[in-house]
Every structure is written in C-alpha cells, then in structure tokens.
Image (tube, rainbow, N blue to C red; front, side, top):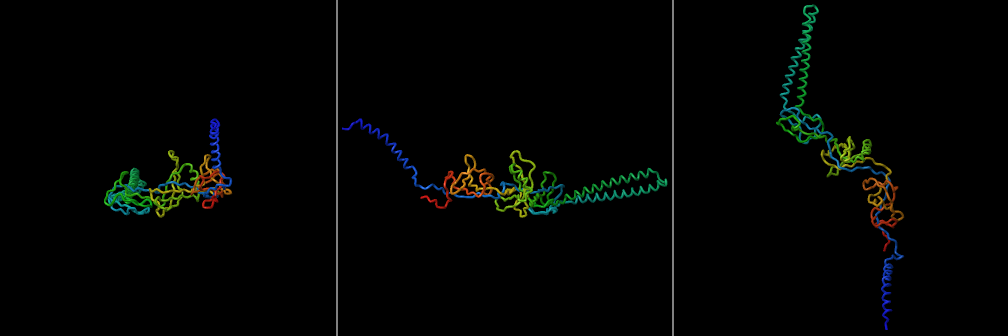
Length: 377
C-alpha cells in the first residue's frame, strides 16, 4: 500500500530538482563548442597616406564686374545718333551717342568773335601806351594819359582772359554732346533712341550701362578664421581660385585680388574678391558660381579615407588592421578634402584601415577583406 507521506516528499523533491536540470541543459546547449573556428568579419580596407593635402575652401560666389559705368546725359538735347547695338562689345573711346549740338556750336562761334574783338582792343591799348610813353618822354603829353593807357591795357588783358575762359567752357560743354565709352566692356540695352530728348539729373534715363567683362571679379565670403591663410595666399603662386558657373562644367581659374578691409560683425565673415581673365566670357555679371579656393598645398600630411574615421564616446577613432586583426586607434582629425581626412595625431601613414563594416567590429577581432573566403562553414 502506497505511503501518502512518502509520495508527497518525492513530488516535492522532483519539483525542486527539475528546473535546475533544465537550466543546466539550456546552458550546455548555448555554450560554444570548443572546436568551433574563431569568427572572422568581412570588411573593406583602405590605406592611410603620407603626402600633400590641399587646404581648400568651398563656397558660393557672385560674379561682379571690375568696373561698371552708367552713361547719363550731362546736357539736354535731342538724340540724333545711337552708334551701338544692344549688348555689343565696346572699347574705350568708341562714340556711342550723339546729341544735336548746333546751338552750342553757335555759342562757340560767338565766343570766338568776342575773343577776337577783345584781342583787337588790347592791341590798340598797347599801341597807345607806346605812343604816350614817347610823348611823355619829350614832355609833349602828360603822365596822366600814359597811366590811363596802361590801365586800358590791363583792363583789356583781363577781359581777354575772361573771354577765353568762357570759350574754353563752351568747348568743354560741346564735348558733352558726343558720348564716348569711358571703359571697354559689354554695353546693355540703350535707354533712349534717336529722336528722344535727353534729360539731365540723377533721375534721368541713362543712355546705357557698360560692364567690364574681362577681367572680372567673383566675390565670396569666408569665415574670419581663414583670414591669415588668405592674406598669405595673396603672394603664393600655388594659391588659386576655381569658379564654376552654376549649370555648367566649365571651370575658370583665377587668383585672390582683394580682401575687404573689415570683417562683417553680424556674420563673422570677410568678403574676398578673386579676379579672372574671363577671355571667353564664361563668367557673367550677377550670376552665381561654385567657388573653390586652394590656399596652400602642405606636404607630409597624414590622411585617411573619410569612411575610415568613426566617432566614439571619447572622440574620433579608426580600426587599424594589423596581422589580420582590427585594432581600435584613437585619432585627432582636421579638414577633409576630396574624400581624404587629415589625421593630425594617431597615425604615421601607410597603415591599413577598415573603411566599411566597422559596425560588426570590436577591438582585436579577426577581419578579412570582402570578397575573400573567410573559411567559415
């Protein structure tokens, strides 16, 4: 006959021992077999380099003419000739507009006649002085007459100077009736046509605007921290500025020409102007372009592929591959140029670095380039 007390004790012992046996079995199943091969992580590998790495600034610039002249009338008159085509290239000295100058020419002829009359009067007064001097010497005439004749000479001399000045002023005004190009460049659309009356004043319609196209400026702003290097680049033959017209692949090469004399306090930037020959007129005033400034090209710079540099809790790091294993190496980085990141501290160059697959890596894990057999089954 079954003893109830003994049966209860057996059930209680079984309930206590069974979970422990199951836990031991699970741990035995999850433990790695001693004969399994070490894990190998497939990665892409690049190299650190020791060489030159340009110091560059990439930004957006605006094309500006070196010189821009707005031609406005200085005298009023009817336009009788517009001697340029809209948008044409003009050269300094080319006649662009002619105004009706008949009235000013008549005034000049009148002034010339006045000069001739005053000249004749002066000559007569000079002859009177000579005659009165001879008579006064022989006491045939009083000294009063001699002094009066000398006064007449001085009066006509002054009058002649005034008349000549008036004539010169009219000749200067005559030049205002023929408008010539003060600079070489490309002219815009004519503001007035033949038959219109040219009006003076700041609010008047200009004849045209001339923009100097070659050479030409590209203006851009850079942070003030680059100012010392930019000032050095002014005299560096290796420094250059590349401007690419947006929407085009044509690249123009120029150099830094002007550094603004003050830093913009609101943005902390300084305006730079680079000058380009622009013989083929690739750059056009007012347009935007991509600007790349090469300030200098230092040698003996250690650089690594940008993809190799990772961010960790203590800063930047790379995985250096040595003897088939990836080792975490802290680095201090600088600028990034053309996909290469400057390594200021941490590498000496020629190291093999992991450029892809870092998320699977830990310090000391075995790695193998992707595409090669890892030996795992």
